[in-house]
Image (cartoon, rainbow, N blue to C red; front, side, top):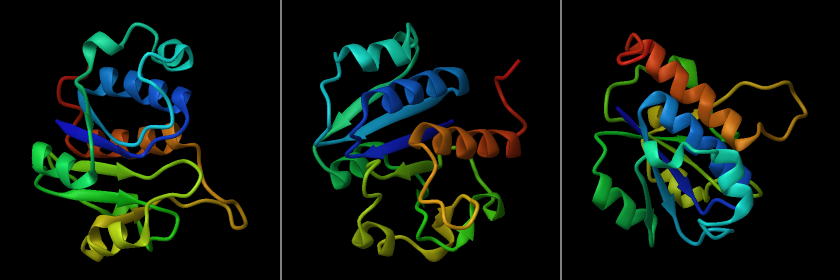
Length: 154
């Protein structure tokens, strides 16, 4: 249905929570190296519980290698520096959602490499820095899934 791409994720419980999100929404997960943890790390396993077996998780050596392997029709990059709200986009099956590392977000060149309509942000109260990565991913995936009528959901 969709893909989540985590660019250089740093915090294992966030990735574990996203594994669980992916299992419950039919979303594939792609991780772009370097990772800030080992995939067998205890905190990652605990957050993902026993959902890992239900999710396609692939690791890629670079963003270019990831995009070449996944070949999504569109990539939406999420950043607090973007201007278009996530709920203004019309999502389609196969879309990929790209999130940056927790401490620094996506690099400017990655954001600028996408059309403005594919650079999205989540609204927040003024003065706040960002949402938790796994929360942001859940908001976007559920909005995209909602727009499609929750296919496969019960």
